[in-house]
Length: 345
Ligand code: DP6
Image (cartoon, rainbow, N blue to C red; front, side, top):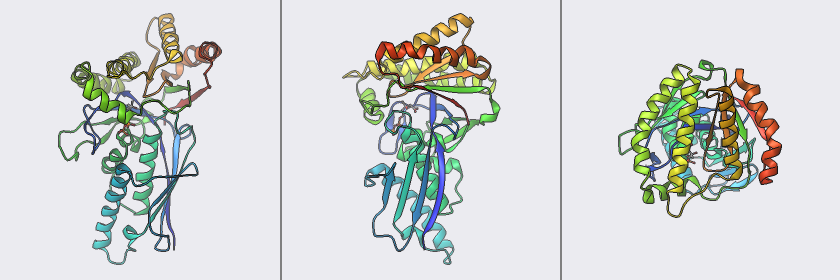
């Protein structure tokens, strides 16, 4: 008999960035972060987890049809924690099949370019953890599961929830309180839209894992960022609660710029933004100058792709301008690969 469960997890894009670990093994961050989970319809990972006594020994993971290495510490940590929760249930009820002892087979598909720096590890580990938790019929809450997904990839803990999600930095050395919490559901601010400008779908130069470790080790700007980010977190939570787009946008852009400034201050320097990214920043500045207030906000992760947040009522002023300017962006860098509009979940 084959036991099986399927799930999907969406991508999340941080507006207050996670950059820096105080414990690289447990993926414990140096600061809290906050993200918006995109809608399932747009960017998501679909994952099926199955297990059976009849499977050949050894766990396996297929991503977009390609076999992946599951021996890494992060994947192993997720498997181990989920298995031990299942083993607990089996101990309590001897009639349950011993799924915790069976080999696991995971099959994942992304509906977006995996290596495009579009938070694929976030959706990937969130879907992996939820699929196995469903397969094992675990009763843990999304918050509990976020502690496990975090060990796969830090940002993955935030994809266990929709809407506006905070990852609390936590105080404990064990990581037991470094978990994701929903600040507001997507319905709280249905006007919110995200536009993703895929500047390049090439694999990013410096991975976020390596990049953030080097920043922590070498950047003298980094401690200043960490010292100011908690205040920004509080203002961001208030902006979300009040649906105050001007504050939300200002804080989003400030935090993205602060993060990329610490990257440039890293030795050797890390450049995630390219000419097209910088052109996108100027387009947003132009849109906001014309509107006389902040109606659009850009943010960039560990790659050149821009995510532009705006409210539906300003769609033509923002998305319209980006679509008509895209040809220019392509002309400038010869790399533009299209725009995807997406609503939040
Ligand atoms: C710039 O979650 O990919 O996207 O924990 O090492 O897997 P690991 O890092 P990862 O880092 C994401 C960094 C970011 C900012 C963010 O999503 O908060």
